[in-house]
Image 1 (cartoon, helix red, strand yellow):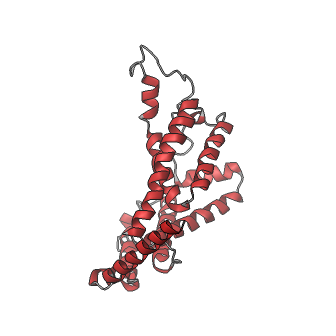
Image 2 (cartoon, rainbow, N blue to C red; image 1 turned 120 degrees about the horizontal axis):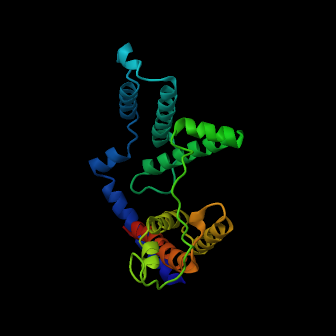
Image 3 (cartoon, helix red, strand yellow; image 1 turned 90 degrees about the horizontal axis):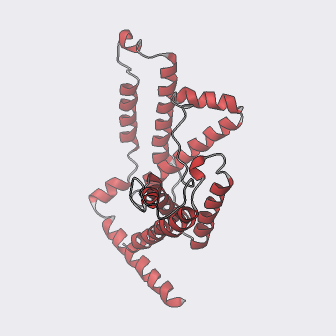
Length: 248
């Protein structure tokens, strides 16, 4: 259809004109310049403060070897993210600022490298490595099975006659579904792929529900509430946002 394509082209042209006009302002020029020396100075000050570079030996004694390794790994991660913000590869995403997506790219790179390190470990050694950085790992977490009772009408329930439905709908995973698929839609921007992934994820939950009790859900929770309402709402919002940002 040529008409929607022509409207989109005119909208993009107007957006580029507004972008060019705004780029002449002093604030816009300052926001888009690298600020390498400023970042270097701020990073040096931050490292000096975080490492207690000017502290005496009595204060340094508070740190154990394990604390030093954890803090060092955190500092290395922060330094690489700062480097990525300055020197990372540019992407087609520039809102709200190109540096934001460079930092995201750097974080994904660090995550990938961490996964590669874990691939060379045995499961027990991998757990030990993760527990070294997060010593609260290994503690059993409270789990909830959503598929234990799939009745819609439950007289006498503590939350009312529709208590099971109410507790399922007003759950933290509802927000997670909407926001998660909003982010996926912004990144993928293809209706077919998004719907395929949405259904595939629910099938994965069915496959692995014997491993994770949270994956055991009622049919109306999985296919009606999750897929047809929450995921659809997030996908629609994620597909709508780039169109608005492109036009503005």
